[in-house]
Amino acid sequence: MLLTDSDKAMLDGAEGPATAAAMDLLVRYGRALDAERLCDVRNVAGTMTQPSPVKARLVREGGWDKAYAVINLDSDEDLRIPAMRVPTCQLQQSFGPDSEGIAPYPKEMIELQSDAESFYGRKGVNILATCTPYQVGNIPVRGEHVAWMESSAVVYANSVLGARTNCEGTASTGAASLTGRIPCWGNHHAANRRGTHLIEARTPVDGPLEWGMLGYFAGGLVQDERPVVTGELRQPDLLDLKHFGAAAASSGGVEIYHLPGITPEAPTTQAAFGNGTGAGAAPPEAVPYGERERRGVYEDLNSQGERADVDFVLLGCPHASLDQVRETAHLLEGRRLHSGTQLWLMVPRALRTTADRNGWTGTIERAGARVLTDSCPAMSRSAPPGTRVFATDSAKQAHYLPAILGIEAWFGTLQDCISAAVTGRWKGELR
Amino acid sequence: MSTRRTAAAGAPAPSPSPPETGRHPHAVVELHGRTVVPGTAEGEALVSQATISGWGGIDPARGVIIERRHPLYGQSFAGKVLVFPGAKGSSGWAGFFQSTRLLGTAPLAMIYVTTTTKAALGAVVTRVPAVTALDRDPLTVIRTGDRVRVDAGDGRGLVTVRPAHPAHPQ
Image 1 (cartoon, one colour):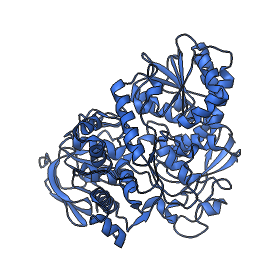
Image 2 (image 1 turned 30 degrees about the horizontal axis):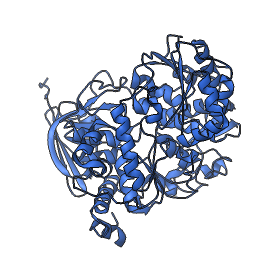
Image 3 (image 1 turned 90 degrees about the vertical axis):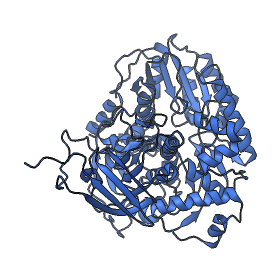
Image 4 (image 1 turned 60 degrees about the horizontal axis):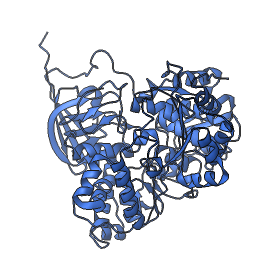
């Protein structure tokens, strides 16, 4: 792999031993990928604060310096971690102090995480604590090379924003933060961003439920490749595409998609496939997404529910937008949750501040529901005690949570979920 | 319609009988490919026909595959040469495999087919010899239980497969 003089200097220790260890990891990683070189990044979204048993042990042994060296740099050396070289944010983590007494999660882990926030805050890490950094001020521009983790954020950054990132990991983002470099491989190259599959919606796609189902279909079809979607698409907004991408990155490993006329790298369908240049330049034959396929996705996502008694409703995956918080408050206004059912709405803490000011949090809490931040039941492996059946408006949570927590799942609209929370019964159906 | 059980598993379900390897039952087979992580290791193979998840897919404390729909559900890869099509799922993949090293349950070596950032970084931070881009499909040539040696040099990697149970001549 080709290293610049600056890369070599970092590797040789000119910027200190922690930066040398970071560059060493990037060189090992770049060689493993067979990358030709590294590229510059000035925006890193990674994870370092979330507690785990291994991390707790490392912190006991050598503080957060040790934890970062081992987990985020894959180094056994005794390192002092310097300030982040390039802007870095913490993605979603575990439940924090504002969830204490609501979400079952060990107090010592909450304290460990708070300690981490204080350490990494001093190192320059922005503790956004959300899977949707693009909702709270971290919005890379088109063509910008970044190093992000979190599959739903990666697919949003590549597809909707036109930024360039692979689906990075804990160690590669940790090393990128200290060097401003990442292997120039995969999605960093224009030729690897062109569409591979064409999907034509032959049923109207409008609103987050429909966009989520279409995303789940697309991911199942293309797996790790790059879908281009045309047809009866109503102009989507941030919320719709948040759900489309998260679903496509759950049923498959989609890291980039194109919506001709909507997303920035696809002014036309031809352009989405590379404008007649390179391999796969001509659009392939369209795979239809019609009423039959739509119903198939819905039934698949609802195949993990048997009992109609719902004891838990989970909203906000990926973390809710302000529109979702407002709509949830509107639907819960003057109502009261069923005595045997809990409802958690997950939001970025920065947006919760706005929701508090607008009175939405108050409305939601008066109904007996909760607005929680920083995490989610899947990340913290935490749901209300005794949960057996949950309902959600997120294809991603319906996909993952049954396996992670061993519970049944129902998937439907926000209205279906609110109805289940108020009555304790699932009555959702595809309309 | 793709269902979660098949499409989302990222690979076809395993066939009920072992795949046809096309090899002579006694033959030692060599496969040539590209080094992902340099090093040498020899041990028993565990072959997964389905892609593997990190987060929600393995338990690093036990070195066991825990994804319920996975064909190797409940099986341990600790101390084995793990042969698999590739990585799927969350971006925490590498971190989970790094934990297997820290907890002493790591595989002995890795052989995978599809290079992704997850699999490449995972092999790096697990710090075991790893190879990919082999000249024959390791998922059909290697069977669980075979004795496999991985010689991952500077650039090129060699995999030597010794069948576990040579069939009796008919």
